[in-house]
Amino acid sequence: MPDTTYTGADLRAAAAAAIRAPSMHNTQPWRFRLCDGAIELLLDPARRLPVGDPTGWAARIGCGAALFNLRLALAVAGRPGTVRLRPYPAQPLVVARVVAGPPRPPTVAEQALFAAVPRRHSNRAPFWPVPVSPRQRWKLVEAARAENAQLELLVGAAPVGALAEIAHTANRVLTAAPGYTAEVRNWTRYADADDGVPVGSGGPATEPQDLLPGRPFGVRTRAPGRDFEPEPVVAVLGSPRDTATDQIAAGAALQRVLLTATDAGLAVSMLSQPIEVPGAREQLRLALGGRVGVPQMVLRVGYGQPGWPTPRRGVDEVVDER
Image 1 (spheres, rainbow, N blue to C red):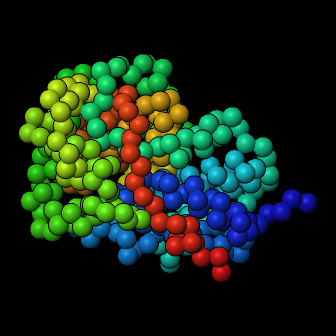
Image 2 (cartoon, helix red, strand yellow; image 1 turned 180 degrees about the vertical axis):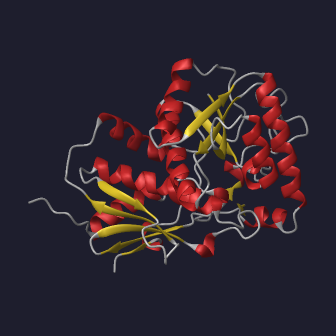
């Protein structure tokens, strides 16, 4: 009879992959524990951004992305699990509970996505002038659909320009909010650290002519002629609704899309300012005609040099084996 419980070794191996997930400002808002032979993922409220993420949306997106990596690691180890999101109504910080299922060999697709986990990095630099093929775009759309999400790709000056206007308006609202700039600065790293965004990973400093807004993590000035692409491929990821459970599931869909892009040799950066401002988010939803449901993330997709990794806390700091 197959073992239907996870061990401390399973927990640590899965957490080692889960911590490679992206999170807003690289706050890493997750913890992991064993509970009656199951692995549970918890949101760490101490790592939620009080100014940039007052509702916990970004923390739940990050935890959902970590959950996808965790699921993938267990599947590749031949020990896939069954996931229940927010299993305890009285304990909203418990994001998910993963119960061991029957052992099976991993699929080729699971192995390919898992191999992309350590290679996935946000690329905040300008992309090369190489078009993204229709086949690669289709793969990204299908990756979102596999997680019950929708991905709408915007191509061309008019739709991308409309989104850029919404994004810049949202960015101005955020920048004017009390404490926002200080919070971003607080998570910018100028020396070695195990969280936050190093200035070397932050991309070049933003300039007035940039089509899309960026966070002020980067300090490097770009060389002449190294402007961002004038017509990037921009994608909007959306979920059917906007409950806490939907946001966690959207984080898992986001990570599947990011790993699919990495496996295809694509570079991606995330743009969440239009999601963080409620009015901008609603404007974006209406502009898309409801085709993605509720927008949960905006992505810039293309080809470029490999992104720069951001640091992570060690497994020992985020797991509880009791």
